Image (tube, rainbow, N blue to C red; front, side, top):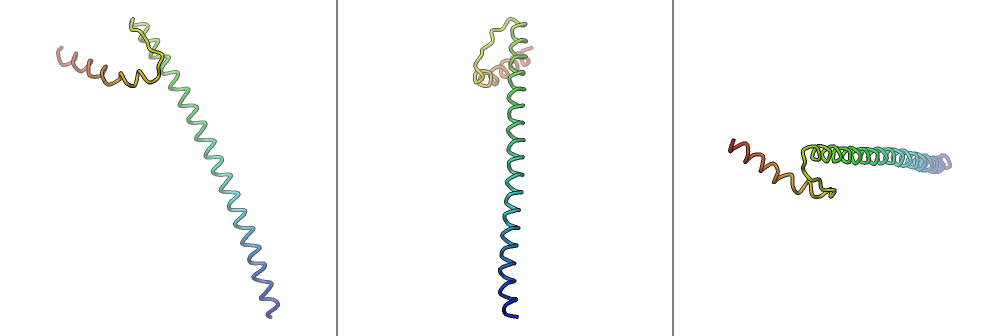
Length: 92
């Protein structure tokens, strides 16, 4: 019976090792899938932002307002424009 007990822990260890390796491989595949999905969504958001900037610039051109190509500038100017429109609404 001692011989059987000594083989059982070895088999149990081998089974546990195989189980853990399989689990880690599954986790790696899931993380890679999630990572790819996140990167795809970020790329899509970037494209949508670019399209939005183009639409805004087109609208500004139609209104006769000069457009700025810098992606930082519209964000920095968003608050003052809102404040200006609030001032105009308040005075009207």
